[in-house]
Length: 132
Image (cartoon, rainbow, N blue to C red; front, side):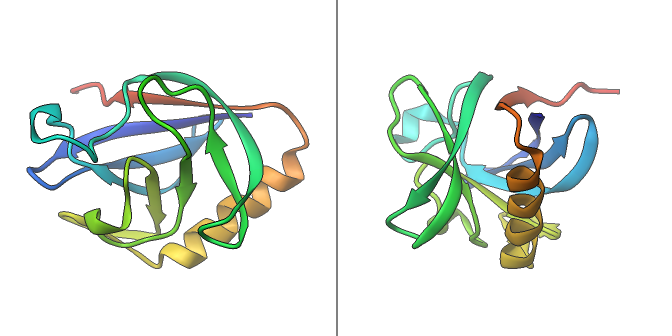
């Protein structure tokens, strides 16, 4: 199963986009700002990473853990609404606005149900959206 985080909008506070599963839209995303000169947290580097489903001590449930991200540890895909809710991780939601994703817990629950049912190796590609 291939997840893709397509980054589309950059603000001084966040990076917004979409998450798709095998090419099908799943939800909206929110990550930290992309400008590394501001220091961490900032969004992780573009690339493809292995994903494992593991228990998150912070969230007290299983979350997708993005593996082997250069310069980062404990990168997860999880619920949250605002840039302050992420330290490099990708937040998910069913609605979005600048620097915000909404209905995050519902989006996270739906995503996790699909990932757990897949039973196949998981990976995620973080990419800058193509400009039409």
